Length: 604
Image 1 (tube, one colour):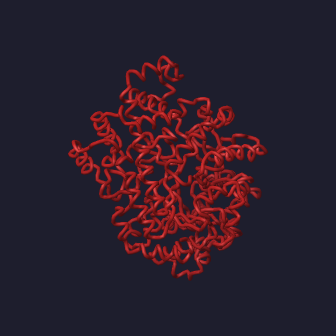
Image 2 (tube, rainbow, N blue to C red):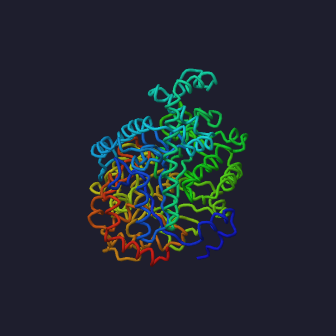
Image 3 (tube, helix red, strand yellow):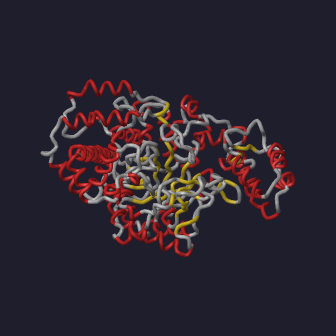
């Protein structure tokens, strides 16, 4: 593969630093991991065991979901700070300059009460752990720890505002910062100074937590790098409206708007995320210091970073805060398409020149025309998502994948491959079909009739419509639907993209149709195929590799088994725990099969 091209891009120094070669990696949320030492949730030192597993299987990248401090919804992409890490990931046994011997019984009690096992995270662990950390903090002196004092000084840009925000939030736990007292809401010096004086210990406590997280993450990065494994952080594109940054830098955000995504064939009514879009003009006036500081801090922990919602750097879909619940009525910001490329390049230049970390883009969704060209020119990888990586309604050959891409079977926002295959391949979204029919002013009775004839009632479930195998051509479909002529092409596209999808996939795999039943052998072929891609990186969710084990495949082969259902507010989101502890992961028989795939596809 002609990967030498990266040497002539804007990120050539980053590529030289990590080494220019094909790599395989694993993507995992830290909250999904657990070890014999974990208390209720994956902890930062647990990543050492994951590094060991990567070495055993031949992988050299660990991609983490965001580790930022989150709010009550525990959604990692809706954080209360894009700097601060979440204290629930701290290991109580690995605290620096803190003797926890006197808290042994309390720690043992937490471990027993919040024992991690396959299922869902009990997020009550965060409150319980922070309460114990407060007791530990009160038992020690911090005024004589030079490293801690230096940490506070070096992170003045964000740390004090974050600690203040946390202290105020805990004293007014229900109200949004927008409803705080006027003097606090608008950060008048006298009001904030009084809070700081009256809550000095709590402010230092929150700073101390961040120092402990900093030390544990730096230790893991050092361990990974010594073993030849790179850490990729995920930096959320946006930050929660209820966050330290929005409160402390209100001029950096368009508070009258909510960010989201426009309607498409996967989300019929679009997505309304709730986070405010950036006011880039105001950020630019300060020489993008907010972006520079954020990257500078992340560089302590990561060798690479994922640019979440990369296309949002060019333009972002926005919906008025007081508008409709869905995102159909939104618009792009900037509105003028001719501004998009220059707008994005300006921000990307700042990001590339502000850190030695290699940027990797998440470029899924509705793409502006300029996106691919900019990624290629800068030497930034995008994502080639196998199930959507098609040309002329067939799956692209693996060597047609972009060189500057990460090849993936699934993402944290999608079903795992095993469940795509069982429940989604060969189907269309029921809500999308309904809205498309509505747009043609179709009579409701005719809509119901068409739906009953076009789709297999027994195989359609979970909001997915499975095509009737007798609808052999799009002409037959149109003859039943009888849509308005100007709408016909939309239905034709939908049909051609999804009908007989499993047969098309088996042709892509170069396997006979009869071998299509879900099994470890089938998963092996799928994983081998994605790793054969031209993409310089192949990074799969850890769940995909675990499906090589028959028992684990059975556990994860359920519709509800996934990390996140986008567009749904649910306690089941962002809480899935792996079916095996890390110690057992290291002993699995499938590790040799994983290593074999990586060797065969020359990613080691």
